[in-house]
Image (cartoon, rainbow, N blue to C red):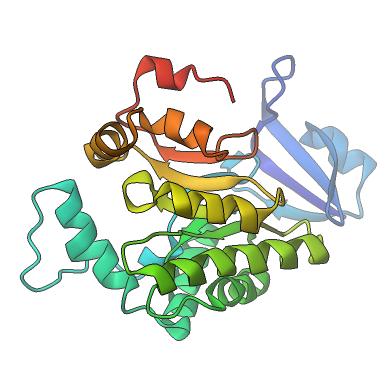
Length: 273
């Protein structure tokens, strides 16, 4: 048994609130008790004590939308890349990076991301991956690192038509293969979602292919209205707002994550799923 104490415990219980000198008793992978430290120490004297050193004792943080492929981009300056608009940021920075990312590069980025998670108390991530240089096997490569690092993860690959039909088809297959793999493994440390980049790089034909390949296995994880590109593209080419387009294509649902949502209208935010 482990007993973590000498800190303020965030119970996440409205009635209990904060415990100023609390403790958390853990047996294996299960939290057995949360209560005053003195009481827990007196009843479980054999438990190994971990000193929180006056810090906050709380559940692990969850990062619900991140990009492992950018794990080594912190502080990076790309020659002649001086973006002033959202699309320029994508084309000059992020798409430029993911077009050069091999499986070895993906693994390195995964290690950088997971080590940051461990340092900062993040125990679960929902990753939205892109490595258009080498797509097949990329989610499985991240899974290898996640298992070694011990960070719970939900992974997907961002489907996009920006690099042509074959790369788009590979991205769809990588999502479907990994989703089936996770269902078979049934691990409480690894899950899959079906990723999509953003509406302005995905046609209705590709949405149809995604839904067919997913076959109800999992929810979707997609950028929505991070820039006005999504809004303009949806209105001009499909005659509706972004969230409505997702609804019409069968992407919305209880298990779906919409990232950013900066330029959504109040009506879109109220759309029933």
